[in-house]
Structures are given as structure tokens and as C-alpha cells.
Image (cartoon, rainbow, N blue to C red; front, side):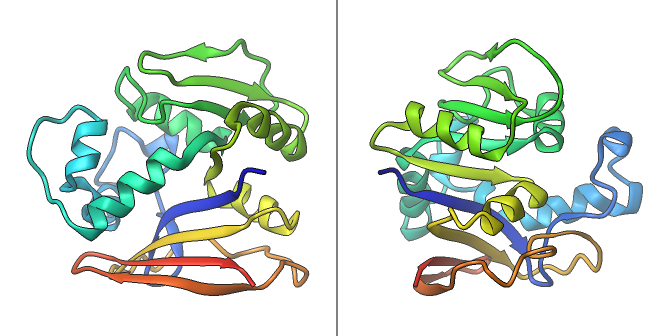
Length: 212
């Protein structure tokens, strides 16, 4: 069966997104400095060769262990799951060829027909909960794995359901002070994890945890 894994970047003080990174302030990058903070959080990925290729940003970029890990992580994904908040931000910010190249299951109360994008990404809008989204993602992924992409609330729900097999976290040496925390609202019953791999780099420490 496919593994279910979380793959995200995280600030040193535990935030997935800085305060102010909302649709209401999307066109105001200076609001609480959210754009600069987000850029610092994601700076480790911007220069990677595989990332540039995947988003068609042109040739060049860094190679090495981080690039290899990024390539491996991306290529293992057979389906993605995300929440409406993440989708709405991405709908405004992603290029026409969205960067997933898989089916993406969006948890939402909104009724909407599938949204097909160039490059193999189709967004499906799931109205009947996290279990239904996971069941559909498993069927679509086949032998490949399922990524819980975010946001924090969606990850917390899947952690609390006990279905997450792995956590991949790029821990960036930046401090947000406020925003959306990854591990708020996590139940005591969440299964234990153990450290599987640590890959250091100047812009992030790449951590992989698996179910103990």
C-alpha cells in the first residue's frame, strides 16, 4: 500500500506560514513582512536544479544531495491532498502549469467540477471529509505515495487520524514569531515517530521521520 507522508518547510520556531499570509493580504507583500518571511523559509528550494526544471524556470541551479532528495520526493508522489486555504492561495500564485503533475484532492465544502491544468495536474474537490480524500488519493496513486501538502490544519487532521507514515521537514533557520503552527491541536494518541535521516545544508536542515 502507498505510504502517506507530509512534506513541508518549517521555520525554526515551528511555523508553516507567517502571519499575514492570507488571501486578504495576498497583493500586499509588505503586510507584516509576510512575503519576505516566506521567501526566507523557501530559499533553500529556489536554487535547486530540479525545482527550476519542474517549474520551467530555465536551466542551471544547484545539484547535490538536496537536489537529489527533492527529485526523489517529487517523483514518488502519486497524489496530493491539500486544504481549501492552500488551494486558494495557489490558485492565485501558481503558474498555469501547476507544479504537482498528479491528481490533487482539495478538502472543501465548496461544490466544484474538477479543474484540469496543463502538465498532468487535475484538482478534485472533496466535500465529504479526510477519509474520502485519502481513499480517492490511494486509488489514484497506485503504487506511488500520497503527499499531505498542507496547510497546517489538514496535516493535523491526518496526524490525529493516525494515517501519516512519514514526516519530511525542511527546517529553515528563520524565525516568524507568529503565524500558522504545524503541531498545534495534535492529539496525544498520534503514533510515535523516529528519526530516519538528517541532511544538513546552509539554508535548511532536511529531516525525515518515520513511524516508530
